[in-house]
Length: 161
Image (cartoon, rainbow, N blue to C red; front, side, top):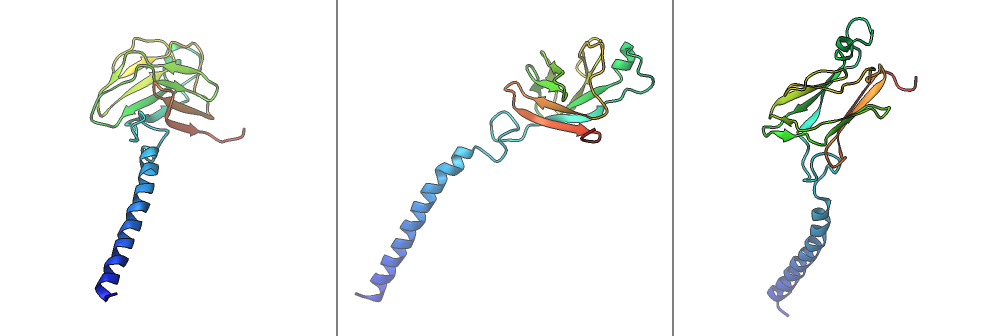
């Protein structure tokens, strides 16, 4: 057998081995659908909707007035260019107090504050219509999309007490 025939056979064996390994790895990569399964809309991409600033202790006296209740809020931001309809999205604290967004489209690069008290919803401020405070000094806010997937979570205060 000539040296060139041996070289060609060895090269063909290597090429066939690489093709088999590559074909086996392809379905596993495709099945993952991306690297972040808990964020976004199931597209394998990060969500552009997230929690921004949090004012958990309203300024001034905590007298349960509507003004004081609305002094605590959580900001929800859209960091992307495209608008996002927040219908069905929820924002909840650790105790399970949940605000469900209705028909609000959040423009690209904009935000909305979710206030605790009563008020008239606008494009930049929405109200939970509650008569008691929600966001404690040691708490967390969790934002879920309309498919109940966690998009973002933010906590504050000391743990354990």
